[in-house]
Length: 183
Image (cartoon, helix red, strand yellow):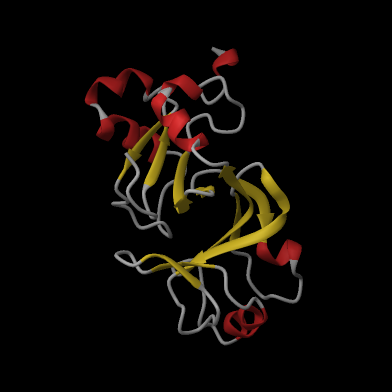
């Protein structure tokens, strides 16, 4: 099942009627006896970073991380040497969560940071103790190794690609509408 952080959670067809997690690919950043935390990788918002922080000269995309703490900004990156106090969650992929936000404006001003090494999210997806395991057992999620570059994905294609990669018989779901009620 889930052995470590950094795995991908792929929503199964069981969640097609769920208005939040329908056709979602999530990156698991924390999983332990206290609960789990993940970020949706394929749900872009209409916001850009400079919409939230006009003093930051970047129009980098902001993503919907999930339904928890949606007024808080979170970020995943691969530059802990530039952003102090970051927490490593995937040593293999060298991925980090958070860190001192005060450095980010300067890093963008100095062009040392861009969408190739940081991704911003409003909110996150969270589960209490054993809740995620229960959902996996109920077939709401497929758990797979992270074999993607989280900074370079096509949000319209990633779920379709991953759902078929998990099981080729899922090809029937590849063309399912995002909103099944419109079908």
